[in-house]
Image 1 (cartoon, rainbow, N blue to C red):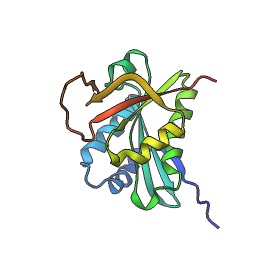
Image 2: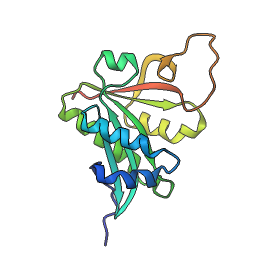
Image 3: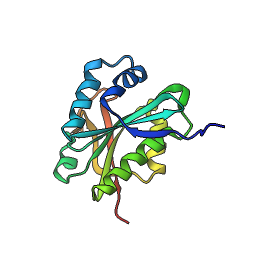
Image 4: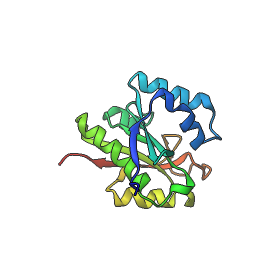
Length: 169
């Protein structure tokens, strides 16, 4: 009998094709850039496997664009993705927990994540709250910049709420 739990590994250069299979609409250059940034120590890429199949990925960005996270040295979980056939099986949670274990090893006091505000992010919103993530208090952002009262912004993937989780015991 095979183990139904996903195996989470740090992505390697030879995993580029697996990453591209998970998100074919993304350009190959994007994942190549991410792997290069991993080599430079700017981010980590975790890849979930179910048996021999890539099932999802997540990035842990050590130098996020969101200024409050950058100023406070809070690494940010980014681009969590689980392929449709593997959703609702705990893979997203396993990927988030891999990032959390990494920041604990690195001695970080907090970890951050952004979540979109439209219904397409409903499952992610519920997951992050269940895992203990709370709004950082900065309000809504658009492309990682604060949205001011009265500003009009499209409700798309760039309209987010920044969340943090305290990692201290």
